[in-house]
Length: 379
Image 1 (cartoon, one colour):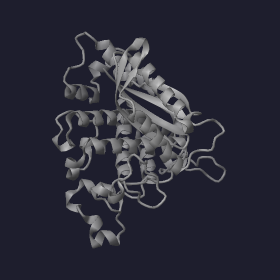
Image 2: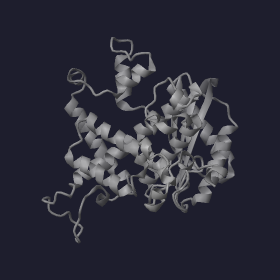
Image 3: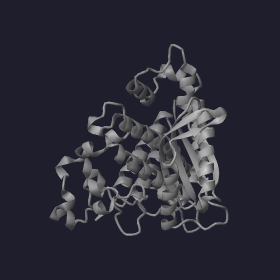
Image 4: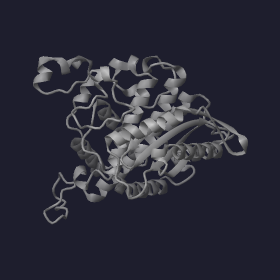
């Protein structure tokens, strides 16, 4: 069975954060280490096949996604931990790094549903497209009445999201529309343009909650395109997000592109949570944020947590993070080429043709080395 193992590695405590050059070097060292491995010997001599890896380095360490074929979840986790531990130990510049987490992340709702339905009348369908449709649909009242109480579940998820809000370190409440006076207190609630702090916290926590779901779904998209060796326009398998990219370039969304887009989404959300985010770096990040906002909204709606105040908080967040909405023109075929037209140049439209999607808007904007354009494309 295929498992995606998430590994969080950290640089030593009391060590200065890595600068962009050091991060690029760390990516190269880790990827070279993985490239030298085809299989891992797990516990009791069980062989675990290494299928794919994604490396996303941030100032404080690296987030690794390691895809393996293993007979059981425990073998996958133990084997990957042993592999990463050995990789760090034998690489002199990474020898002092530590593994903070190594686990297969299962979305708790889908995992519970699968376990409850195993070998029963509600067993998940064998067809991947049918499984996707089943997981994506909104529960009907009859199904919501079964199992755990829907209201209790919504309350638990709301509490979890509020607890995650502090992890979105790059964005203070004002980014979500909370207006404070000079004394640092929120102004009166009669101002229709202010968002209650509680709603802002729920929106922030929902973004963190949805990030894990989005990343896992993008991983599945990468796997589907890799297995079919096809672009999105030709893919017959179910896709979560990449089929919702602008249609005009659908023949160019292949497995290589999907990996770059996934790394971009991980790098962007890592900067959201580690406090280093300043501005979106490229068109691909603008599109990744579009998907994150969509997944966040859908998740809040699923648990009936999306009221007017939370919607306003998310809208304020989007308005503050996006410098403009030029990327939306990619979905309108009538504006194809506007970035290269005299009118587009006059109003300052950023380049949006496909080959520029991973090119930084300006010097100093961070694009992950694994996603950055090849030199000739960037030129």
